[in-house]
Length: 155
Length: 103
Image (cartoon, rainbow over all chains, first blue to last red; front, top):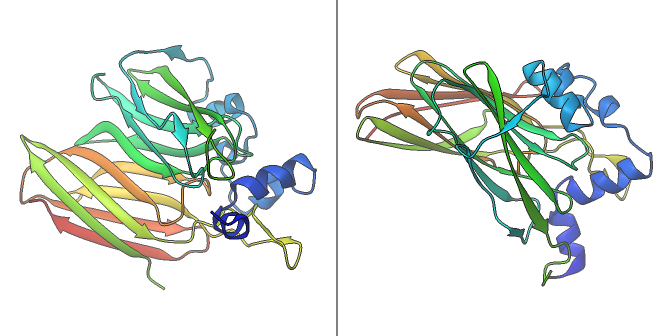
């Protein structure tokens, strides 16, 4: 893969991480127009507090988190959260621990919906994907490390 | 401009998996434009709602960290013939809508 085209093709992730590290940008100012506190939080705990009002989670084996062990292209990382084994699932949040803004997406379920969500997310570097499921008023979490091989080959 | 959405859904034993592919740049607002030294302006889908036969089912919020041209899949308790509707808006106010009858 040609380095130039790879850099162009990589959305947000790499450039974003560099920009934040260098102090050029702060995510909160960039996303100021969007007033969701949770989506501008810079740590996973702050993000969880913003979404659920608490960051106390218990690990659960009932959450099936499907993500690749090695993602060749961090800009398109497929993630599936399957909490259909749990009862009373109210919502699911997907976070990427080292992204400038860890919270990626949230799903709130009502009526006929089942606790299942699948999406594709951007990741700037090797980090953990965290799925937090709220079921019966409690928070449960599943975590998996995804290796992002920047540069295309090997890892 | 309306956001383009492709949707598929099939019910099996009362549970339907609904998949959608959305055409959208999902620009997070932190990626830098190297030529100007300024970030590309943010343009990403921030809310997605799914209804089944008119009743709310999934209410989803996204950040700019969802991949470009997003794919999403959810599951609902629904039978074939039920109508599933997906509507979304991005942070600039653009909106899209799609619906289908489950197979």
